[in-house]
Length: 338
Image (cartoon, rainbow, N blue to C red; front, side):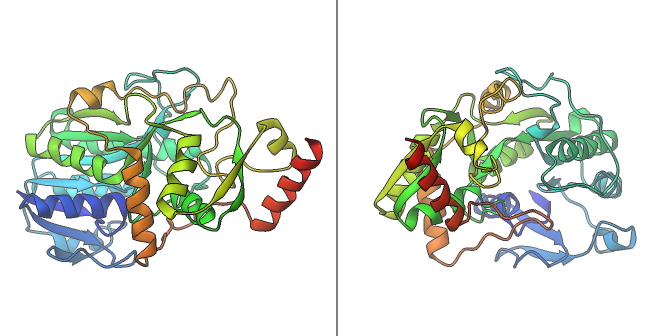
């Protein structure tokens, strides 16, 4: 197939390009050339879809499908999709489960209420509701241009794996590699739903090859690891001797430790978060989504980091992780309280 990948240099886009080339497809990437180098073997086009003129490099070209793994601005998606309606018969877009208004109960599926789609570009990267509204706007742009049967919308959960541009798993790996006592949040048995970027890429490509339009939550159909297993897997991958100190959530909050941002992947228990790590992946599973063992993702991410890989975070996103001095301070306070 002749595939056009928007972006294609980072994380999910890079995984899609690598997998597509491995399957024998001809891949053209379209990006500004700012995030990183294109994968060897692609035809690389430079452009910027924020303007009509920026799409000119695509004029007169035809493809069997467009794959859009990272768009966040609805106006840009609509411009791109409209420009490609006569050039490709199928459009695949990677969205996010943040489009759902609430994750308060386990089993949220594709029929759940979403945020109303917005068309503006201004958003705080840490504001999940605003991100969800923008991504929902992107979904609507794609389906408006191509229709539901000729478009694929894949709502990914939390993504991990090599070439990470988010930085949550890499932070845990780098912290645990330093060894010693590690501040660990809450219940080690808390389940997590994490998908490897390569599994997400393979699922998207499978659907594109079958030209199977639709809407899917791309998450494991049940938690595929726990916080405790994450720490253990990081220790095993790095070969580091660590002592995780599992600390009460209310104590962490009293010490000013910020969930998610300072201790990545930590979402405190509460009525508003009961379904956060329990989104239904039944639709994607039925459509063929395959999830590799989480330990493979951890090992491969560590290998990537050791080989010189670096997290190139999305523009405007704040870095993840707890400062070493603050971690020592909280551990000391926990010891005193105990």
